[in-house]
Length: 421
Image (cartoon, rainbow, N blue to C red):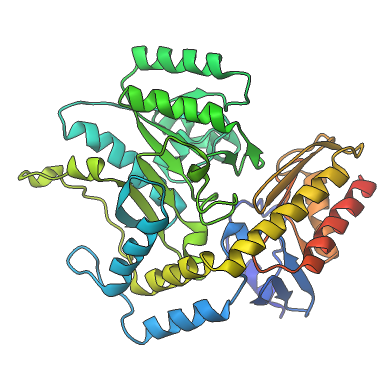
């Protein structure tokens, strides 16, 4: 029996309506930028398996570093112990994080990194005798699937059944270069009417919204207002972190730095799940007290797993190499050339790129998870390209190790798909 047939007996896949889409493709091998299915067919992974495998699948250097750690220390609870991989990861990460970050808190995944950030912000004020219960977030944002993360997200396709159970969140438009006064007016209104604990945002690029890029100066204005008015700022860099925007972090493009940062996905380069919520020393100090209840009582069983930490260290080492930095520049230039080539196509509504991220919106009405979108996904897979459209948005986020020929093949397949539309 085929693997994909065995899959149907017991498994429940995410983001899938099994009544309409009963089968899932069976992948048996991955190396570099190539996935291989159970029939031996190969596919270029053009989205780095949800933005995780940025140094390619089964990277030899990362595997070796991980294997070395597996022989030394596997899992140890982090509430009562510490270990070399966690300490070293904190040291290496602080070196490259945006200025001001000084404390590292471990989580399991992107949603729980956001969950911890929300709880940090709420308790930061609670510990000082002040109750704040409202957050500000962008329209169309996405921050995860746990309840706090859902609350601050703005995509009802994921949150619809749960909206009656979510936290109080006030939304503002993303800055587009022309709506700065409108946003500031809303911020002032919310600040006067509500007890605002924090502003959470995806810096510069909203991933699940369709890789929408917003105005850096406008975001700086929002952050500056929050800093001036004692509103904590939380940068969700789960998708944007570790080089994807051309800098180590998207927050590096903006003068005003966040108080809290959420990290996951490429943090452990697609090998082992782990996440981090980092913060400034000022926030950490608000939890120091002779009163034990003022401590941050939030914990995950696999917090700071030594193997995951070793994997993350290896990824940070690779990220800083001249080879990878040059590759990010190479991919960015190729994306820019492709953007100029395709931007005037009759089926293209808009196109944008930043670092290794490229996206185009089709001039075609399409549901986020509808029949036409599914046909487009199948079109790409039939031609050996794993691209996963977000409604009418086709986006690319390739591993840094992709070759020019592989990238050109992705571009060519996208052009072919426009002809089919």
